Length: 295
Image 1 (cartoon, one colour):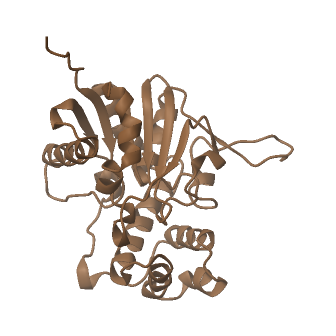
Image 2: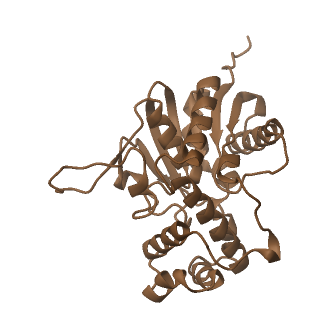
C-alpha cells in the first residue's frame, strides 16, 4: 500500500535588498525567484521541489525608481541624510567607536566598510557594496510612514499573500520589515507561520522606532516599547546567524511579543552571513518547516 503524500505546501517568499532587475518583465523575475527559493528550501529539507507551491512577492521596483550606478562608478558616500542616519545607528549598535560611527557624516564609505569588514572578517569591497545598497533601499522604504514606495511595497506583499493564500510566509532581510507592516495593515490575512530570516526589525533608533504601527509600551515609560505579532499570524519564528551584522540584535523576542521561537544558526562562513540561499537551506529553517510538510 502506498503512503499518501501531503499536498504541496503553499508558501509566499518575500525578498530582501538588491533584487531589482531593471528592464525585465515582472513575471520573468518572479518565475526565476520562485525556482531559486524553492530549490534552496527543498535542498535543505532533502525534498523534491514539487513539495512546495511557492509564490514570490516582488516589491523591489517600488524602491528603485531611478537609475542606479554600478561598479567603479559607484559613489563612496551615502547622499541620503536618512541613509546616513540609519548607518550611524547601525554602527553604534555594532559597537563601533565614536569616530567611526559619527564619521559616517563626512568620511568616505570605504572607511566605515573597512571597520565592519575587520570586525566580522569580511571582504572590504563587498562589505562597502552591501552597505551602500542596503541603507539606500532601507532609507527609501522608511523615509515617511505613508510614502508611495512604502505603501506600494506593502500592498504588493499583501496582494501576493491574499492571492496565493499561503500557510507559510518566509521573509528575508528588509522583506521582514515590509511583511510585518503588510500583515499589520491587513489583519484579515491569515498565515499559519511567519518565518523571518536575517531580520533588522529590532534595530533600535533606525528600523524599530520607525515601524508602522509604532511599537508601544506603558504611558509611564516603566518598560521599553514592544512590537506585536501581526494579528493574522498564528506562529512567528525568527532565525538569525549570530555573525549576521544585519540581524542586529539577532533575537527579536527582546523587542517583540508573540514570537514562538527565536533561533540562531550559523548559516555560512565569510560573506555568506546574510545570503537568503544560506538561510533557506540551513538546519533551523528545515526544522521549522518540517511540521508543515508532515515530516
